[in-house]
Structure formats: structure tokens, C-alpha cells
Length: 280
Image 1 (cartoon, one colour):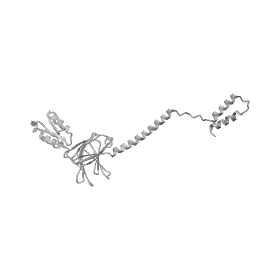
Image 2 (image 1 turned 180 degrees about the horizontal axis):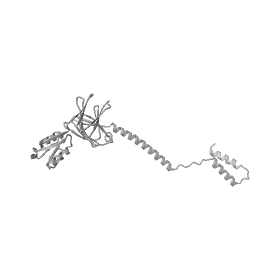
Image 3 (image 1 turned 90 degrees about the vertical axis):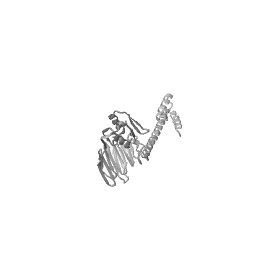
């Protein structure tokens, strides 16, 4: 028996009470009883409730999809490795995503991930010079065989020798070196050279400056051409004039040209297409 039939039977029984009860009292009494006994009135579910629920479901779906895609995206970033090789006979300049610069020697290569600005780790084979942009939150690490060089901002060279030795020369700043399976680390100062071969390790000094003491300007020009792969054109009448100058090895070429321009009161122009610097 459903609720309607039950309600009907009870109403009929209720109405069979003694006739001394007036119709108004019967009706009022029934309404009071019915309201307490049958709570069949269900609150209507309004449209906006459905809409809110739908929006919530869509939002949760999109959020789940974003989390999944974001996780997949991060994974894909980590797995995407950039490999840059230098098969030529000249140094190759590589500008990294964080603004750091690498001069990759011939027949060398380096590897780094797509998310390099947050994961500044490089693997190198061969030889390269690094000019690293400072970023205290993201240390710069260079791995070569079993060695790891960690820096914040500096200039150094990492070289892998044919006899499995790894050498690191520091020109500016400070670096920390680690060797696989060793609990020790080594801090280098500018002008120091770290060499590791199998289980042999040495730290020695090297000359990081090139000095010209009362030398013909022509010798400075030759040094630039041999170390920077640029042809240098200077007024002929100045080439034999003597000059005293100290140039830090691996110094920026723009700094050297600026110094020479100031010494001889000349303007310099660098043509990247033909790799030539002209002083006038």
C-alpha cells in the first residue's frame, strides 16, 4: 500500500469520529495530523543547483586534466635533451637559455634539458669555456665523466683529455668540484687548475693573463686573431707602435676592442658576417 492509499484510509477513519465534532474542527485536526505524519513534500531542486553541480564537475574535470597534463608536461621537459655538437674546426658560440655563454671547442658536444633555466645542468664531451650568469637559486653544474663542477656565476674551462683525465681551469669567480663516489669536494680560486685522472688528483696554478710589455701593437692584433677567430684591420701606421697591456685570457672580445679604441682614440666596427673587426 502506497502513501496515498494509506492517507485515504486514515482520512476515512478519521472522518468516522463522533458527529459531535464540527466539520471545521475535523478538517483542522486532520491537517495537523497529516502534516506531522506525512512529510511527502520534497524541496524542489532548482535549476541553479544543477548548474552549480555541473560547473563543479567541469571544473574538477579540467583541474584533473590540467594536473595530469602538467605532470606529463614536466616529465616531457625533463626527458627532452638538447644535444649541441661542434664538428667544425673553429670554436662554436652557444647561448644558453639562462643567458650563459659557452664557447664549444671543435669536435666537442654538450647536452642540457629543455627546462634549463630551472635545471642548470650540462653534460660535456670534449672541451668548452663557460661564462655563467649568476643565479643563486639555480646553481650551474657541468658534468664531465665522473667529475661535477658547480658554480653560481663565473668563467672557467672544462676539458676532457684523451687519456680519460678531466681538467678544469678557473678564470673568474669560485667553483666547487666533486668526484663521483668521493665525499670530498674542492674549492678553486681564480688562476687554479684542477686535474683528475682515475684516482689521481692535482691542483696547480696557471697563468690566466697575457701580458704585452712594450710590444708592437701588431703582436696584440695577432693574439686577438689567433684566439678569437676574427680578422683585425688596424691603421697601418700604428702597427709597429709599442704598447703595454694586460689581457685576461678568455676576456670578452668587446672589452678588448673597447680598450684598444680608447688607447688609440679610434672607433671600432665588428662585422659578424665576415668575422672582421675594423678600427678607424
